[in-house]
Amino acid sequence: MTLTSSAALPKALGHIRVLDLSRVLAGPWCSQNLADLGADVIKIERPGHGDDTRAWGPPYAKDEEGRDTSEAAYYLAANRGKRSVTVDIASSQGQALLRELVRHCDVVLENFKVGHLARYGLDYATLKGIKPDLVYCSITGFGQDGPYAHRAGYDFLIQGMGGLMSVTGERDDLPGGGPQKAGVALTDLMTGMYATVAVLAALTQRDRTGQGQHIDMALLDTQVAMLANMGSNYLNSGKPPKRWGNAHANIVPYQTFACADGHIIVATGNDGQYQKFVEAGGRPELASDPRFASNPLRVQNRDLLVPMLAEMVKLRSRDAWIDLLESVGVPCGPINDIGDVFANPQVQAREVAFELPHPTAGKVKLVRNPIRMSGTAATSDKAPPLLGQHTDEVLAGVLGLDEAEIAALRGKGVV
Image (cartoon, rainbow, N blue to C red):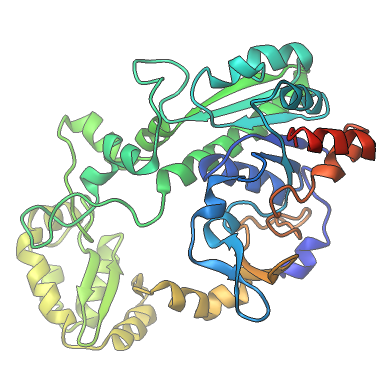
């Protein structure tokens, strides 16, 4: 299914409206997912400033003459498909507007510090009184309770506190060893994904029972959960896993190797694939050697085996290895830079990158949602909005305000 044909499909969440009070990445990532699935996402932003990421450039989207626009690429990555409305949340009239909007929404999404919105009458307890079936999702660094609940949470800090950096980076006994953060804000992104799942589950429960609920999402909770097998390894052994660089703690060989002209990833997931790997490399004796005959033995003797495999791999070029290993069914691949990624024929065939018309840039280049469904669309045809682009449209279309009322609010700096 092409992107064009997908866009013509009905929207699974076309009946859902989201009031999005979040900014930066975790919350906007969640609301962009919901927008891609068809929800009407109303993004509330501070007049004159907007989402922090609007200023997180360069790079910026360029107009048709190649000049920078005001739209930072970071902001564009997480705000497709939304309507931007500017409201001064600190003003009593602004708060009243938002409470009125809540009456017309199914979901509220926010990532303020714990307790912050209560002073504005925009907390779950208050809004539940206005709309009992409201799904209200809070995203914070550490959750709504516990000794750290009052602290601000940032992806980098949580990657460190949550253990990810302890298992990311080269081995301590090798050159360049030490903790390393992931190259993208994984904790923010995964929290946004978990929040998306939680919102959808809460909406399903609401549709069955008529009851809304409060979702409490924490970056630290998410980071600990996504340790996955590393967390399980510790809980079942009592030993904290260590960094393995581009190797794997539980599988050998499952790592990068230097070829004659670059690097390759070899990921042998079972003994049969390992045997094919060494046979393809002209070293079949490494499969029958009793020290390396099974994966547990290879893990135990990795420091003996890996140098021999490394010498074997150096004898051929990267492309020669990929062709050879693919022909015998051994998982392998290159290490692409991001330019290589978007030039990859599979990525292009799947239309992962696409363009949307934009008011100031003419067109903006974006990355499509990876969800593909046969009966409903999972991508938006609306570019990330300009600051306040839809303020009048929402206030008139949702709340029924006339031009004079909107002009009066704008004159007071409320919108």
